[in-house]
Length: 231
Image (cartoon, rainbow, N blue to C red; front, side):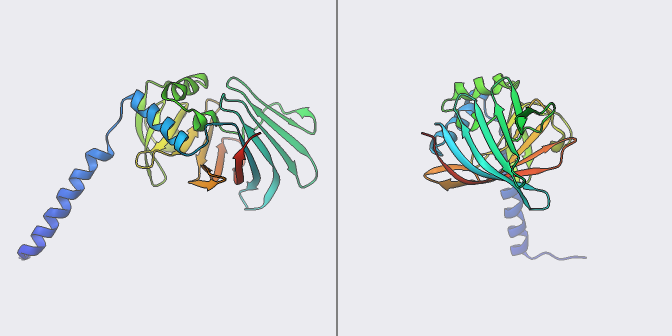
């Protein structure tokens, strides 16, 4: 028969109580209006609610840099990314709340990979702006679910499908519960964007990288080398 010392029982009981107490906090789901407010406060505190200019590199799955370029992001949801590849080819990505257009070498690409996420979600300065932005790209701001992205326990604004977290098809913004920083965006075109931890550049905290995944396309990563306020 196994014998437990009194001290061991006490320590085990303390650990069990601690773990039990932690679980309800992790499972708490805020009201939609509160979740929008958390995101807006995070955006404002990070200094990224105005127009931004980014210097980026496009990196393939093998770690090689395929192209470099710049992006301009407007708070209203308009974003433009220009890339120059190693062979000199110029590719331009333009996102609006309702459209996404890519030209390569001056010709329009019919079914492009959408490299620019709906960055207006990272720039919305008020709770209502967060809700309006999510709604504009096809999400339902009235829904907030729980989810996991890597090591992050998340609130999923816009809701998510039941089943594996990677298989979500709903338009949604995934926010870390503790830091309230964005860690993932799923758009309505079947593209998922994983966001690196925000790095401070020029007084602005912006994701250090954006991992882009879509069925039928190779994986790409946009490394953000610098961020500044756009003139």
